[in-house]
Length: 187
Image (tube, rainbow, N blue to C red; front, side, top):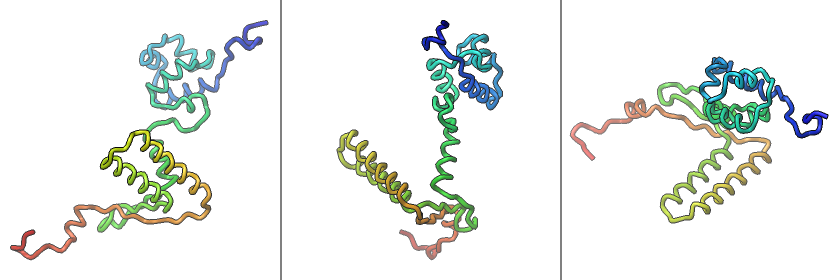
């Protein structure tokens, strides 16, 4: 009986290497560059990208750290690659709608659910209190975790969302539109 049949051996898993191939293609990397950047031999890089060897956790961690992707993405547990720009777009699209304003008074208008607004304000309040009062860091963490729990429960339970609009103003345009004090008058 071979070691893989007895359960003790490694089993080839080409799904993980599919992600490596995808990563290399997205980054326009050749196996040689991939190997050099991570300190792998070219043989190891070729085998990983072709799927002829399994992706070990140690190698996966190196790849995740170097290319800013999640282990969940490498192991096909998530479609989110964990890149910052991707996460920003993912969450903006989930919780906010942004549309262009008229360009005179405001450049953009953000629409957000009122529960999201209240959550953001509550977390901001916690942070402001933390800055002005002596509160143990652990207490702040627990407080913010509770705010997150309350938000998650409320957000999941609410079918109809209340949308609030917030214009993002062009500050320079607003200053130009403000009435100017009569000449000679100072503060």
